[in-house]
Amino acid sequence: MSKNRYKNRERELEFFLHFIKAGEMPGISWHHLTDDPPDFILIDKNDNVIGLEIRELHATENQKETEEHFKTIIKNAEIEFAKLSDEKICVSFQFNQRILCSKLETQKLGIVIAEWIFGHLDKYLQLTSHSLPFIYPIEEIPAISEIKLIKCDSCCKDGWKYDRGLVIGLECQLDILSTAIGEKANQVSEWNSKFLYHEKWLLLVETGETSSVLSSFPSEQIDWSKYNHFDKIHIFDVFSGSVYT
Image (cartoon, rainbow, N blue to C red; front, side, top):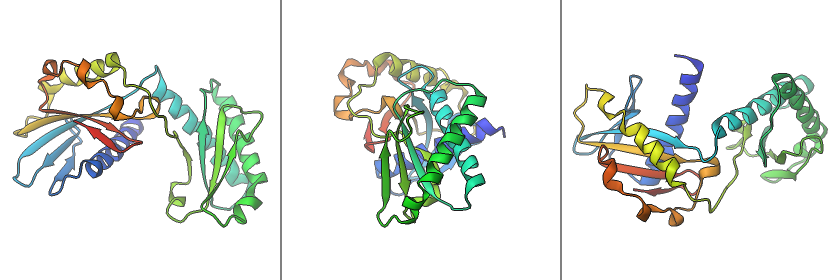
């Protein structure tokens, strides 16, 4: 399995587990398929088989690539920090804008961030609360809106991480939604034929800049009958934990 495929499967699983928890589905068992589509097989308490395919929504072009770029910078910073200290710490980062730079420049940013955190290591070691945030902490990198030093046993397992933050009130754009559903509808004929599907579900996941309060979701503007390839279409807002079906 390729590295990208492995990362995508991890991301699918993360979304799926949050969805199952938010949807309160007692008695459901499931399998994460390697020969998808669909991505998951669910079996309900009556032994009915439900196929579920996941599609992440991105409101802006190249948003996923932008997030991966942020994560690369953070990973470089973590590697550089390990050269300065053996201390195992948890740090989260928020960004307020894209950073466009080369691989070499990304490595240089990692060094700047690592040195800044090393310079604040004493504050981390003296920390008695859950976390200590610094707003726009590094003048040379104005795209970083927050660095948070975290001292919490349950959180520390996450290590150094990109925190998308909570973006509220952005409507899920109809063209993006229609494109996403259309793409997955065209693949239904390719679904794994080993299973006899009682129902077919599509899970659309709102993350990052697409995250919206579902009360503002423009459901009445959509002709859902066009998407009868699926028995149910779920829209899951990761940040609010809400599901619209």
